[in-house]
Length: 243
Ligand code: PGA
Image (cartoon, rainbow, N blue to C red; front, side):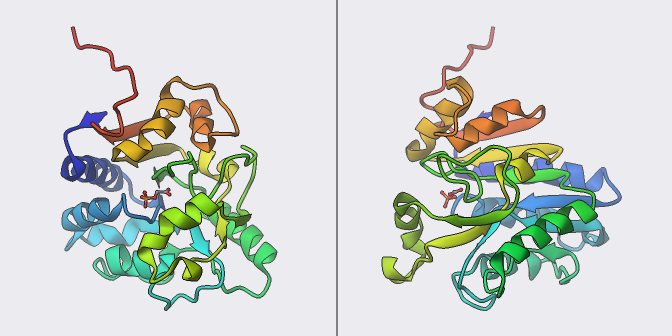
């Protein structure tokens, strides 16, 4: 789906989430952080604010930096709290995100995986994409079967995320992320991407071969994926003309 601009991309993706939420008595949402979904959260909060249906939502985030406490302004927990949990008054037993300060990170990863499965898996997953094609923090080269695990971030990812920190030195070099296998288990996936710097990754998703060099191409094996793009992110995709 190609939309005109970022506002429309945010509205469209939030509307799809809203429709799924109101159609279900209980729903497990897989959620993402980063620059792209900020507008999505603004719009979804507008749709949901004041509705008692927020009680039926459970959220599971894709990833968290290792070494940042929940209260750190750059943690993904803080991002989620500011953009989604707090505005909707969601409680701790509805909102899950890996603990990047766990003593045993391997154990934290496998417990997070088990937690998702114990709640019945993810119904609807939101994904952004890195310029290098990563989904969650699954960097190029990742195996498509992997479950939640500890990753070393590529220098290009550290660089891309430095804009959120005071200095690039402060950007963690490791994270816990759902694996591509975990992501592919979601019943439905919505990918959002805007800007020309995402165009190559989107091209690979639509026209490229399935390849570990471009983790997003793993989604080619999934039966229910919607990709919402602005015109810049779609500019390498050969669109069919409407007849
Ligand atoms: P961005 O990150 O939304 O900040 O561009 C997306 C991602 O790396 O998955």
